Length: 245
Ligand code: PXP
Image (cartoon, rainbow, N blue to C red; front, side, top):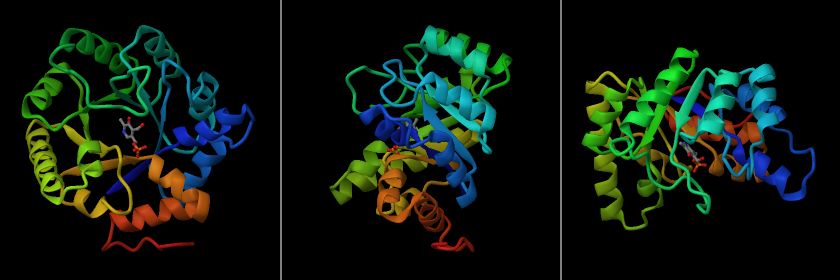
């Protein structure tokens, strides 16, 4: 299974003091060295962490493909059309949220999403939709023209009650099966860490996990390459990835 690393919180640390460091491109290079397959950045409308300059610089110099997370908002769409990242993940966005809460309302915003997806895909980007594991939402996602979905794993990952966690995991498993049957590539992300990864591995048909906060947090103590390596080893328990360089 492949790992995409979300480096938003490298930028959070930089923005906290208005410094030039830590550098998002340097972070991306470490992730590449450690075996990640892509780098995700979320250009939020409030620019709380990733800035426009990060996106352009990463697109031009990052050794890995960029997955641009973004809202379906005209200002950000224009930037995406200019940058042409290989991958784009459309997410819902609320100003006051701490992180992306819930998945896209694909059914309620179908027409607008369909138009945006066409513009972005005609421009050369592969578009994925960040959604809850709900059969109707998955079916609507397939109809938008998107070829990829990212299942929102946040509720499962944050659940402390084992019965509730199991129920939420079953929904993710069923969602992945529905998406696969519709020919969609299935990614997953949000809230994944070394404690809950074993549950995530029970979800079938997963192509890529997009993981940010827990890896960047772990990097404080272990270094970024080791943190990426540890996650890759946990994601591929029967593989040959070294636990730590
Ligand atoms: N995938 C999507 C669509 C997200 O919005 C986020 C959070 O920015 C992530 C993955 C990564 O989540 P986390 O930082 O909790 O690993």
